[in-house]
Image 1 (spheres, rainbow, N blue to C red):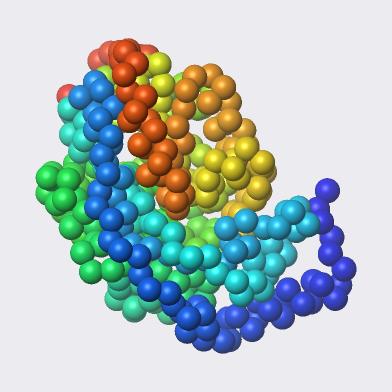
Image 2 (cartoon, rainbow, N blue to C red):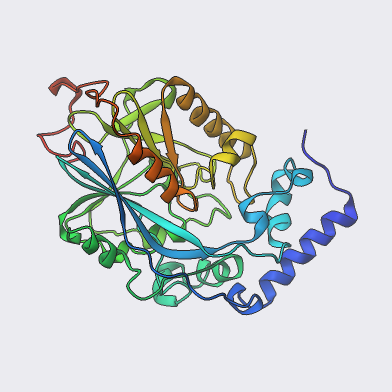
Length: 353
């Protein structure tokens, strides 16, 4: 049942939201802390010729209720969730905006693009400058330190932006598409079709998506157990995209299946594992029921076999990957499914091409 707050409390949250939007930007009303030292990329060799790179690209601060609604407000009705979140003036510290690079024998796959130092400028928001460009800086604070940009991070892995054949977007919020403009003209961009369906107050920055023919829509056709119907990205079927809606209805995640275990690069499906385990709802989700269903899927995936879930803003990512690395002495099994030409995935190389 929805949490029906008393009228005075409702009005208080709405008044707090209005005050937030007519007041200064987040970076001005909350003293901005010093930017964290720029960390270099972190790599984990997964076996089967696959290396996963963690790329900390930019940082973001959000309201505490953006990160997680308090227990007494967790079931607040849909229309009141955003005012409840916006009326909170407490901010988290800087959180990483993590992009991920999969170095696969069939090519490089980038997941999300992180945040940019140009956040908040009209140039950054492009066609959304008069709408989202005025709203976003009232909701969050985001930036990137020098040498914290996506090209620099990719270069630190020993690769070049022009080598990235595919960029998968988990969704189109700013801290995931902030560096789209730095992608090579040859890089294909994959987005779920549901993400392109307009939705009021979604915060999606669809105007930042390129209109030069590189954008492709996810075509899910292969049943994959608890993960639902997926789209393979490699011909050998060990990297694929699965739907994880809730944060946005078009949110998707990238899975690396190593046979006996797997990694789910889960974007903003949650902020961390604790939220998933406890069913904690963040302040910004497009659909609460879909969010909880995604939590259930992530939980059942772990029950099925060892699964590491990696979230964009989780400060434990470094430790989680390091722990995964130390457990690599277990034998690597072949991928669970080898795709045949009948799966119609293309002509070799990345299945998306």
